[in-house]
Length: 76
Image (cartoon, rainbow, N blue to C red; front, side, top):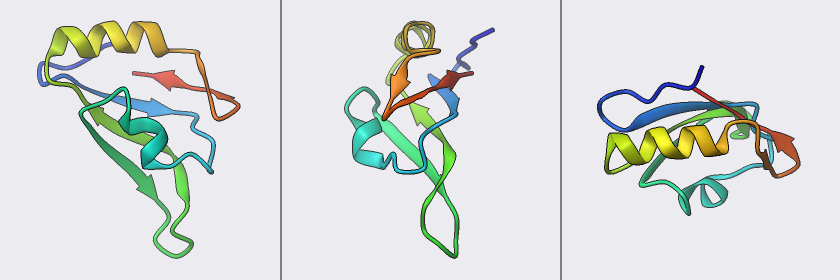
């Protein structure tokens, strides 16, 4: 089940470790890509924010299972 919270935020998992913030920023208002502290590489997940909860819910539904940088992402 894909659920966006009341602040228009959700969680994306299954990202390619080569995916960077630029690849995520286009569809989202704010991106927090979690990185390994030592290697400074993506840990494969991110938190994103939209201006409205309705936009977040629509995007979560539409993006869940889509390919991003060659990997299917899971949006929660």
